Image 1 (cartoon, each protein chain N blue to C red):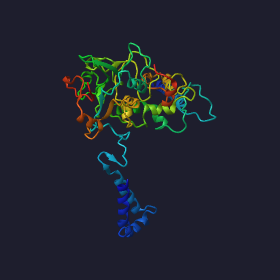
Image 2: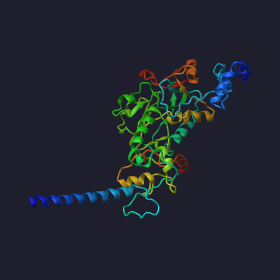
Image 3: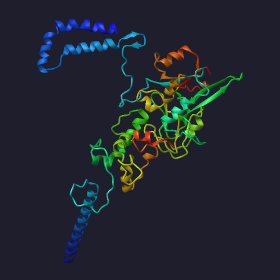
Image 4: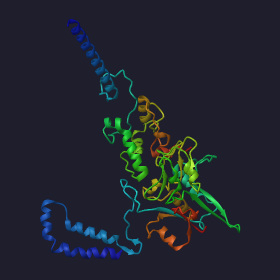
Length: 272
Length: 147
């Protein structure tokens, strides 16, 4: 606080005091009401306040959100890190939050779509682990390989999606996915979330809450998990080595489910 | 020579009649889509019973929107789905926000609803709302659980 507030005020004296006085007067004649010296001071102040006071900590953080008119960039790769040691077996907050956010049916039938599900894994000693499974957002997604219409695609920032305008509902992608992440919508849908259009006859899966990411928000399941206090899901940019998720992946041993398939999943697990 | 002249004269009369009938049809079709000024006698041609609820102008000229709204929507949908571009000017959600019926809060569901009313009138299938919400976001939150 002190370091940021001090220097700009000190720096303010030298240019505005002597040399800048004469040119400023001539500019004033053309554009009355604009104090250029004052503008310069404000700019310096803003620059200093943005300087890191410690690694990873700045006085204020400029919004990282992409403007709405800008396309998703391949400089980012969104991913998740799920900590099986923190995930509670009896908790399904992520599933409930996903259903609510994406307008999935709250009353489940045999044919209801599942974007995220809790799975229980038991090892040979009988120890159980419970983790959420969803679309793993592979870098080399088999669902995209097999799609006959190009409806299944990977966005520039690594999110694997279905373009429902092009999907013909053939369900080949459901067959190709090793994670059983995709669902077919069998019944007519009403009461959709305007951000998440969905309807009968298309295949769908976890979108990583792409509509929220585009608004610089985190996915609903991550938010809900943090709200319960478990904080088992970490969301972030895998391409940015300074992001929390990248640092955590560098620190602890994480696995990709079915790593033998070498799909380079965007969703990783700790403690499996 | 005389004969030929008589035939030519009759053809001209017929052509003039056809031209008159055609211009009348064009004029009637024009009134069906034109905004009738206040006090003008009502046309006998039925009109789609649609009205914009929100005051103010549409994102483009009304005449342009009538003919080209589908092209704008198709362009915007590809930008949004594939590139994540979420400008609101030509988005379907933006249409719904302004054009939702004052009573029902929807753009479909009756012949007075903005989208369905005109599509029924024109006999064009409207399938946007098999997947997209036909009411603004605030209305969806109040409508209850999805099915």
